[in-house]
Length: 498
Ligand code: FAD
Ligand code: NAI
Image (cartoon, rainbow, N blue to C red; front, side, top):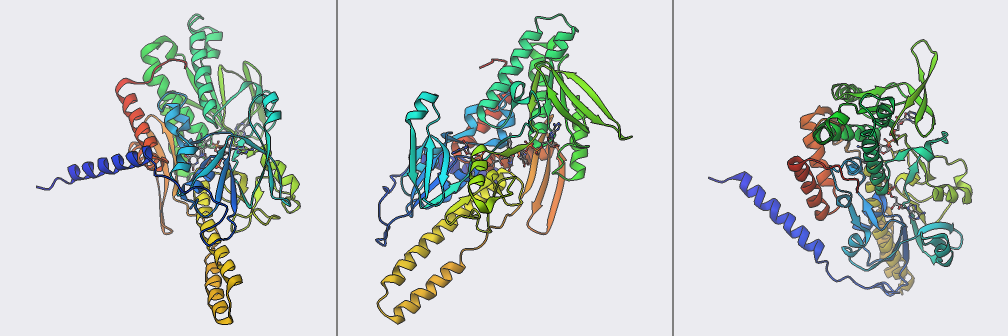
């Protein structure tokens, strides 16, 4: 009899093997050239960033149509959905990165990558200043100017501290890969230090109090992951420490996961209670010192109670704000006056007040949430829009060369059709997923434009895992993430602080 399971496994393995082979053995690329195939001057695109927006655009861009340069201080794409799993070692840090050069190498033509920060743009002269992120002495020598025909800004955002005293100095963040490494080090430092104090002592209690501020998906996922690590692994190696660990999440609003549907807040909060993660709601942190968090709780009668909370490690996940470069660009363009949450863009993601600058992802204000899903779709949209714009350029040169009115009319008709083919960006929300700990996840899933489902639990956890595996940017990343999950299920996570 036909074994569908076996056939499926063989097909999936063959597909995975073929993808890995293709990635490990990239084909030769066309070189960058000064002219297009039609003989016109080839335009240049400079893409700033190597995150969700930039990498998604690059992956889909026909790089033979333009001379493409990527500028980013980070030489890799980071798969942020699994970043909360990195500090605990559920996922190895290197498993969720993909070198931007590997992504570029899989496109039709050569792409230049420059490891640098963009520091300034002159939108009237089409020039960009970049600085190599080294020591200040090096950086002085390595300031460069680039010319561009099109600029795509995809520089992301940065954690927001709201200028709350002590946050920048004492908190850990969870935005970039080095943050995850720092969180791990800090956690294990607290654990080791706590073991030097007698059981039940105040200092030991403080060191073992791990506080997450912010009940958005970053804070919820990380609190869940951290508690899993304590309950499943720390408890095996250091049981007396594990039983004194307290994980707390502080949220200013009355609920966590406010962007999810109501049934899922309730589910997440119930799961936290079952897993002994303390939730402090309606409470805004307003000061942090080396050892204490000060927070004010809004009570039902309208009064406000001030709390002093001793802590060992604080992870700040209270939202994001525009990057300094984005604010600098906003300040230089008159039409951007009043932009607070990112660059204002038109329906084609072109930065308002410019002719040839585009913005995608968290640095653009489009009215959509600042998520990887949005940045990915915007990157994909720009890649296809740039292909259409190259076709329009070719038709315009053809029109200029047309020798008689008949020919001109035919080319004009094709040009009109090509112009009409440039459609506005349309976001297609596929749903939201969040891990909540204890091998449970919540999901708001959208089925086309007609129906949606809110679900939470162990089965949703399987959906969460399969979706994240599917979303990985390469077969290599998929294989590494799957291997990490298998490794942890067989051997658990370790307590090494490297
Ligand atoms: P980023 O991905 O942040 O990339 C910005 C890039 O710009 C980086 O490469 C950076 O080095 C570079 N850069 C910065 N400054 C400069 C400069 N001056 N010049 C040049 N380059 C510069 N979204 C989801 O949809 N699903 C999820 O499950 C999810 N999970 C998340 C988990 C965590 C822990 C975090 C922090 C975020 C998560 N997000 C998720 C949100 C998602 O990661 C962001 O919305 C997404 O990364 C935005 O993409 P971006 O390209 O705008 O920015
Ligand atoms: P967020 O903005 O979603 O949540 C931050 C939370 O911190 C808010 O609930 C806010 O009320 C709270 N807060 C702010 N200041 C505070 C204070 N002083 N004291 C206490 N609480 C305070 O931020 P997050 O989670 O980092 O997410 C950023 C973006 O990335 C969002 O768009 C999110 O949807 C996306 N993301 C998506 C994920 C997913 O889909 N699984 C995972 C992680 C992030």
